[in-house]
Length: 205
Image 1 (tube, rainbow, N blue to C red):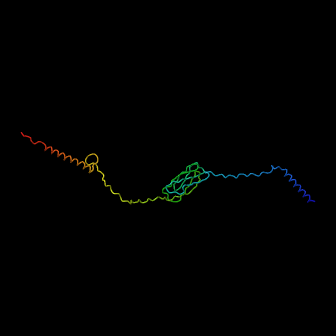
Image 2 (cartoon, one colour):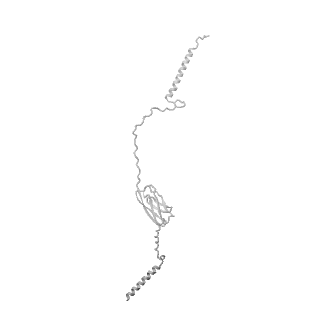
Image 3 (tube, rainbow, N blue to C red):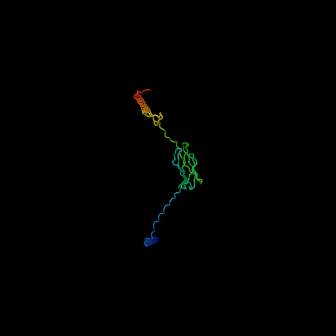
């Protein structure tokens, strides 16, 4: 008798649940939960990163290197120290700290530490390698294979030696002497002929 009563109660409860579900409107059903966006990780600004870098990392003595650094406060200068180039100031530029020191010419080859000293006490470091400079060796000069050319056969004319203007060489001097002698000879012959033609019949008193 009790089992029959329990069975009837269960059937009644099931019937009521079905009636309630049928009476519930479609719009009243639960909507799926929306997915919440994942939190975006914030990228730290350059002022939150303490670093220093040297470009190029390998250099010969006597050449310039570029330094880029960052402190927590990049609006004020900081200091970069190294045995390769000494102590230099890195200046604010475009949100970073920069400098262009020259490696000392007497710096020996090896690895040198470059340290950043920020105004607020922060530090960072990197390494700089200095290598031995390679200078090109001069090739020996070649001797000429052709024999030297013969001296010119034409001798240059000498300067004036007679007191006349212009240059006078041996040919020019001969040209002056020959016409002069010829003129004197002709004059002597003319004088002789004139003397012979004078009349000799002069009567003395």
